[in-house]
Each structure stands twice: as C-alpha cells, then as structure tokens.
Image (cartoon, rainbow, N blue to C red; front, side, top):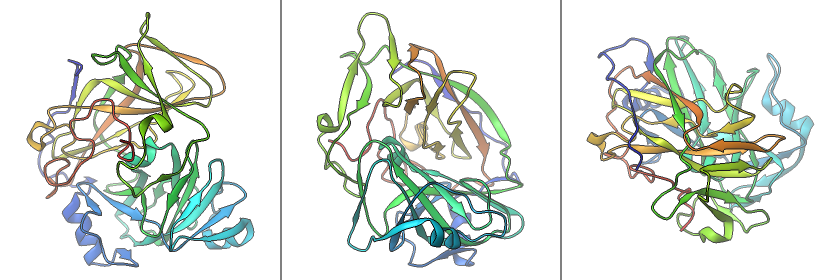
Length: 353
C-alpha cells in the first residue's frame, strides 16, 4: 500500500447542519418522510445513506431527459418511452441504451431537509451510468428541500450489458440539513498510482462485447473475460484511449472518521479531459482503523473524453470533499456492515472473481 494517507480531522461534536447518519434516516422512514413501497431490507441502510431499489418496470427511452418545472416524470415517459420492460423476473439492459425505472422509495421531505444521490460503488465499477430524477427538478441527483413525490433511476450501461430486477440497488441517497450546498470540513487532492503492486499491476481496461453481468450476483464473472490487466512498463504512465473505461487506484490511503462522510468530485476540467469516479460517496468508517480499515485506497473509475490523455504516476486526478455528520452513525462502514471494499487496494467490483 502507498505510504501517503488522506486523513480528516475529527469534526467538533453536535453540528446542527450536515449529512444525516443511519439512525436519523431510520427515523425518516418511521415518520413516512421516506416512503417505502416495500419494507426496508436489513442491509439497505448504510452509515450515512440509504440504498434505492428498482421497481417493477423499466422504460426504454429515446434519450436522457429532465422534467421541466411543474412537470411530472411520468408524463415525459408517456411521450418518450419506446417500450416497457418488466423487471419482476429480471431483464437485460443493453449497452448504449437509456432506461428509466421508478424506484420503490419516494419522499415527503420537510422544508429543512434536502437530498443528493449517487451510484453505489459496485455500480460505478461496472461502468453503469445511473442518475436519479424527480418530478419538477431540473438537475440530476439533486432533491430539493421539501420535495414530495416519486423518484426514478435513469440507467445507461456503458460497457457491459447488465441483468437487473425488481429490488436491484444501483443508487444511494444522502440527506442533508442546512441547504443543498456542501459545507466542507476539508478538501484534499488524490493522485493516481501507476507504479503498481509487487507484480506491477496498475489497473484494468474493460473489454468490449462481453457476456452479461448480473448486478445482484457476487463473484459470478471471471475477471479475464471482462477485463484486460494493465502492468507498469518502463515509464510510469498510462495513455487513456478515448471512451475506454479503466479501473485504477489512488496512491493515498483514505480515512473517513466516524463523524464525517466524504465525496469525490467526479470531474475537474482543470486536470484534464477525463472523468474520474462515477460513484463518489465514501461512508463514515471507510478506511478508518477503528472500523477495521487501516487505510483504504480510493478506486478510480476513469474514462477519457474525445482525445487520448496521458496520466503520469502521482498525477492529481480528483478531490475528496469531507463533510460533517449531524451525529456519529450507529452503523460504521467495515465495523457493522459486510463491506466488500474495506481495506481495499486496486479492486474490481464484487461481481468478479
């Protein structure tokens, strides 16, 4: 593991604004401010977020869209859908196609509480581009304070065709008091590791025209059927081919204290024409020694846009933004949850063996 570390100082106790912890989210469910079409699953609640579940149907649509002010997503679907796909027995979502699926969770937020959504870690590592949309909201993944209504997932597999079904969890939602804009405790850069491990492995490049990946099956796919390993050779650099998908790792070991949460900024035009990290939420306890982490490197989901781009070992590739929680969560990543990515180095999603 790299020697560099990214640690955030502990926040002062008792902030009135910030990210809600697991017990506060549980209270939102109990008060029906988070509405569930089906009962909460035992492992659906995360330290500072809630997993969102696909409903019974997905709609293939002509293009991505956002509803206008006072416009319902369902009305847009009536106009834009090509056909409906039942998810009750599972269905294949093809690469390059756009789908919209109603979620089993809906909201009746109070006026002082907003929310933000993000792909789950495993979703991002599969290169499944997914965003949440809401009635009358003209931004992806943003739910304003006081919102009352349904939620929908827009899903576009980029590299692998995937199998999903009712109840599949591709996205997660965080709740924030004190306004939509984050109030960072710390904002730290992350750099890319292209020196590699003892064998010189620095990352993976996704293959095209592969078999299916079932998003609910762990360890069911042979790695080399889907990924090409990349090894360090000569200069410690990597040329990103346009529109190819890469899994890399940070040099720094990340620690997220129990009273904070973090998010990686997915794209920074100041460091190059590429996107890094589609799934940006880091839970309280990630990489934290008290939760069995001892430092965990950030896995980077990287795609270059339009032109080849050279990455050098140690080059800054993104930023990690820490925020306070309103209270220390009753659940911690790694300590209380069966976490696939605690104490990780370079690691593919849980679907590969």
